[in-house]
Image (cartoon, rainbow, N blue to C red; front, side, top):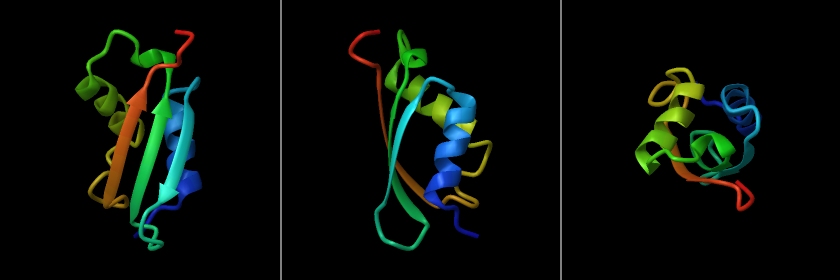
Length: 79
């Protein structure tokens, strides 16, 4: 079962309350998304740790309800 962009954004923001999240449906099928997540919580974390933080916020839905997520993470410029 596919997830919609609003649900993905809600889950990420629940796990990273300060996050700025931009979601784009890449294929129009509700199954392949791109997400850009900006959060101060990423400071001093490796890119792998940042991505794991986002995946953890998604609560195990990657590979299940959410088939594909091209993920970009960054720290705000003022952090």
